[in-house]
Image 1 (cartoon, helix red, strand yellow):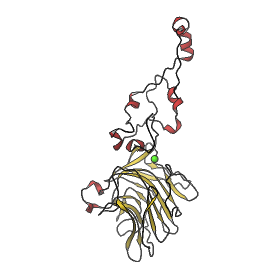
Image 2 (cartoon, protein in one colour):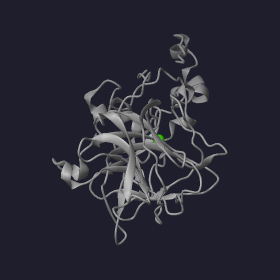
Image 3 (cartoon, protein in one colour):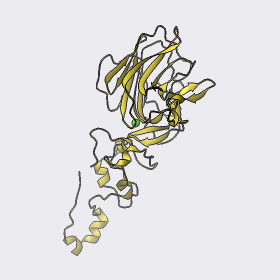
Image 4 (cartoon, protein in one colour):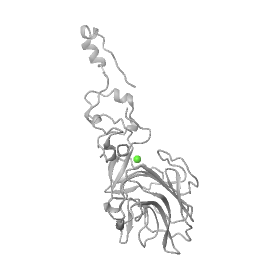
Length: 313
Ligand SMILES: [Ca+2]
C-alpha cells in the first residue's frame, strides 16, 4: 500500500516550518541503490548465487508500511523479495555435519529437501568417474548407511540403502536425469524394506526389497558423503534451501509439496537454512539436532531461482 500525503500550497506560505518539524512530509518511497540493484525475478542474475547482505533484515518482520515510513536517512532498505535463505555448496569441500543426527534403521525414515543443483557432475569435473554427488546421507564406500544422491554414471536422482546381506546399495531412482539450475523438492521414504523417491511430489522410483538394512555409525551429512578416516567426498555442487527428517514413512502416493516445511510430532530435524551467518545450522524442531556448517556460504534462495508465483512489485 502506498501512502502519499499531498502538501497543500498553504504549507509553503504560512506554516511549513512548524508542521514539517512536527510531522515531516513523507513523500512516496524511493528505491535506494541497494533495492535498485536487487536482481529482478526475471533477470539473468537469478541463475547466480547472490551473497547475503549482512546488514539486510529479515523480511518476515517487515511489510509495505514499514518501507513507506522509512526515514530519509535510512541507508539499508528492507528487501522487497521474501528472504528465504539457503546454503550454497561449492562441490569441492563444503558440507554440513549434523553431529547428533544418526539413523540406525530402527524406525522408518522420510527425508524431504529442496535443492537446486548448480552442476550434477561430481566435484566440478567433466567425467562421471569422480564420484557420486550426495545431497544428504550418512553413507560412505564400505561404511554402509544411506544417501540421496545423483548417480555418477547417468545423473539420475537416487536414494540408496545399504543391504547387509548382499553388501550392495539398493536404490530407488528417477527415470529422468537431474537437471542443473532446476529447483526440486526431493523426498526419500524408507519403510524398512523398500524406499520410494519423489520429485516435486511425484513418485519417480521404488526400490527392490532391502533384505537387512546395514546402518552407518556416522552422523548425517548434508552436501557430501563420508570417507574412511573421517574425511569427506562426493561433494554436492548447488543450493539446499531446506530439509526435514522424519521418523515415519510420510508418503505412499503422490502429494503436493509444501512451499515451506513445518515441524510436527514426527519431525527429527527441520532446517530452513535461513541463518544469515555463522557455522550453526539451526534445527527448528525441539530435538536440537543443530548442524555445523563447514565452508557452505549463505545465499538468498529467491535470488537463485525465482519461486513460482513470485513477482517483483
Ligand atoms: Ca531456506
